[in-house]
Structure formats: C-alpha cells, structure tokens
Image (cartoon, rainbow over the protein chains, first blue to last red):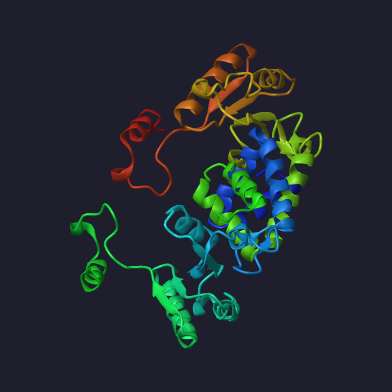
Length: 196
Length: 196
C-alpha cells in the first residue's frame, strides 16, 4: 500500500495484534491516517503509558499500576477465600456476578504443554506459597472449562491437596436460559451426576 | 478488566480501530501487556512516526512522506494516462497487475451522501484541475464496483466530459477462473452486453 516506509512499518506493527492479518492492518492504517489521526495519537500514548506503568500485583498477579491491586488491598473483602482464574477478563466476569467477595489469584495463562507453557510460566509456585498463608480456608478453581483449563485446575488441585484447604471447582451444568434439547450431551451428563 | 486506569485507557484506544469491539480490544491489550510488550512499543512508535510524517502527495493525493510520491515523480511512467482509484490499497492492487504504467489519482474515499461524504471530501476539484493539465489524454475510472463506487465514477465522468479527454471505466465481466454457474446474473448480463 503506497510507497512510504512509515506506512509499511505501521501496517507491520498492527499485524502484531492478535487476530489482525495484513488486510485488516492495512485497513486500520488507512482509517487512522485518513480519518482519525487523533485516535492514532491516543493509541500511541495509551500503549507507551501502559507498557511503562502496568505491572503485576505482588499478591494476585493481575495487572495493576501499584504494588498491590485494589482488590487485594481491600480490607472489606473475605480473606479466607481465593478464586483462581486464568486472565483478568475472567476475574472481571466473576466480579461482575456480584456474588463473590473473596480474593483472587490470576494465573495470566493456563498450562499448555503444546505451546511450551509449563507450571513456572503461570506462577504455580507463587500460588502454592499464597495458598499456604494463614487465614485462607478455601481455594475456588475457576479456570476455563476447556481441555487446558481443566488440566490446569487438576494440577492445582493436586498441588494444594496437602495444605489442608478446601479446594473447590465451579459447578458444571446446564447454562441459565438454555433448552435441554440444544445443550451438549456431556454437559447434561455432568448436570445429572451433580444434581442437587 | 482489572482496575488500572492505564489498561482501561488502552482498551478504549484499541476500540478506536475499525472492526475492533470491546472484547477484541481487551484481548489485544492482555496479549500485548502479558506476552508482547516489544510489539506494543513498536506499535506506539510506528503510530507516532506515521502520524508525524505521512501526508498526501501534492499530485495524486496518496500517502507519502515527501511532497510528491515516488510514482508521480517517476519520469519513466506514462504521463498521458491517469487512473482514478478510491484508496492506496486499490492503487496497490492495480499496480501489482503489472499491466499499467500510467499515473494515479487517489480519491482517499468515495462519494457517500449517507455518510456525509461529498465531492469536496474526495478532492474532485483537485482531480478536475489535475485532469486539465497538458499532456493528459485518458482518465481510467477504477473506483470500486459497489453502489458508491459506481456513483463516484459517474460523477467524475460527467465532470470531465467537457475537457475533451478519453474517459474510460474498468471492464465489467466474468472474473478469471470462475464458473458461469456460480457467477451472479448481473455480471453475466454485463459480460454479454460488453462481449468482444
């Protein structure tokens, strides 16, 4: 697209975003430069600022700009419960339900041997240490219900077994609002076994 | 997603990219900050650099870092032909065919009254002036074959009528490699009328 080096570099950089190919990157570059240079500058500043200031909470590993994130620093939360999630987006989903008042541990990933992601990459040693702290009574495993998420939950459950904690997993079952006819059989089978 | 202002600002800025919603923006921000801060910095620099240096060619209106783009400055090209396209990406497509050696005029858009884009926004006055220059014999209308592109081609053709130029339009017809059974009827009808 055109002959400018600056433009080629921009398209190349936009291609580095997940889910963006060369056509989308070209379209984005064209849109930004032709119609919305203000957004381009805002994005450049937001990127620099985030890279410079966003780091990991020392307690729960989520993104924060301080040493300890607001959630971990909140004395009014229930410090006896720890919910283990894969990403900040998952944490946000649990938080938005409004039914959980405990703390979190954010793995920032999941075990995925095929992608070379092992226990060290998702901070399991740190989680074990965090789970050994006094006052903690329950660890809730809220990793995703995918193959990797299930494996991660299993490994964590095994690891925490010896600590004398209650280790629970989010309930599996029929999603709210769904019709049985359209729910996959594995889910119905689980819902039958775990009926209450 | 988490509670940091820098992250929220970044997600908001990424949402400004065309075709990116809040979920994609969150995923991009997470990926950049967790796995690829180098790409984030490259993107920030590429954006700033492009915004500062990329402007429009004084002759053909495409993106360039100089006053005149390389194509317009190329004395070996055929200065008697001018190909009118909507975007630099379209120009690149024509250029990659290797069959055109003339010059270009890039509208950087198309007439689209519903979006409030009129003749002034796509530089029709400048095109008229450019088309009046000595030595030009033919203007090839290569706007897209969409409703807006066709309308734009029609308006330009009307505008240039009085200048005594040959004004042509890219041929409509059956695309290379296609089977008639699967080509839309409008295209076949055009191909029949324009048979040669």
